[in-house]
Amino acid sequence: MRLLCVIQDRRMASSRIRIAAMLPHLAERGIAAEAVPYPEGFAGLAALLGRARGYDAVWLQKKLPNWLDALLWRRCPVPLVFDFDDAICFRKDLKRGSYRSPVRERKFRRALGLAAAVTCGNRYLASLVPARDAGKPTLLYPSPVPTDVPLRDYGAAAGPWVLGWIGGKGNLSSLEQIVPELVALRRRHDFVLRVVSDGAFSAPDLAVENVPWSLEHQEAQVAGFDLGLMPLDGASPFDLGKCSYKVLQYMAAGVVPVADAVGMNAEVIRDGENGCLIKGSEGWGRVLKGLLEGGRGSLAPLGQAARRDAQDRFSYEKNADALAGFFQALPPVGRST
Image 1: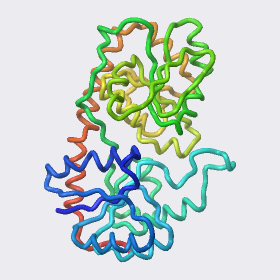
Image 2 (image 1 turned 90 degrees about the vertical axis):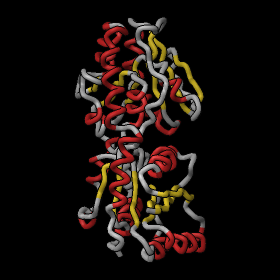
Image 3 (image 1 turned 180 degrees about the vertical axis):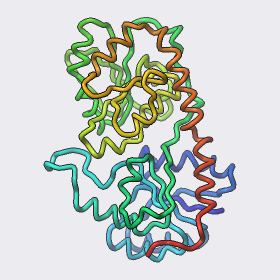
């Protein structure tokens, strides 16, 4: 089988993680896949769709076509599979007073209408598919995480505790929302907040270490965390659609994840078994206080369970099997018009 993958940018995390890094694993399972950037201009898209005749399917990743592009996509000669790993029909923040965006919603419905099948990151995202398209083949495809990574050794760790967060600068606002509880916690417990990002984070009453993110060193940085943090806003439909990738990175390294029980986080983390969930009024301060007072030794079993789950459920190898089977089962015809 030949698969043409149309991505936005290899530097974009979702394109790199969900598509580009998956291609070798698909090749091992009989799918010759190639990734190309979304073309510029009407003529570029027309040329790409002409090229698509040499493939068995097209995998379009997270791009919301405008109405002009949609005219061409309707002529796609092979089944089109649409992939998304964010709640892209909503705005990310409330700068305009609402998460809703009629323009995004319209483009999202258009993209789903063009598709013969759908791959998406979690159940919440699948629930956003319009009713008219709900019967199309749909695969829940969690963003895979590498598992051949450095591991946290709680037995050898010493010095101040390291509470860690990794992510893009556009998501630093989620970390800001728990700063008051972290400040209160630090009055009684010594810890460092280590932020691995392409942007700097500051909190005057916390000991913050900013580490520039790099693809080559991110796994080693995560393995230096004692606890991996993923705060989310449960009132945000955009945050509800998050695919818990931070949590998965922590788990792959055997680092205990601590996350708000929002969206996919509550499915990935089994509270008290492979990590800790912040539920309702419990609060970050209370949960973190209990973990710090329990000592690093008590974290080792949770970290080991987290790593096993990362290997068994979220590795590239595990997801490649499901993904390959999904593509190979696509009917040659059946594209929505």
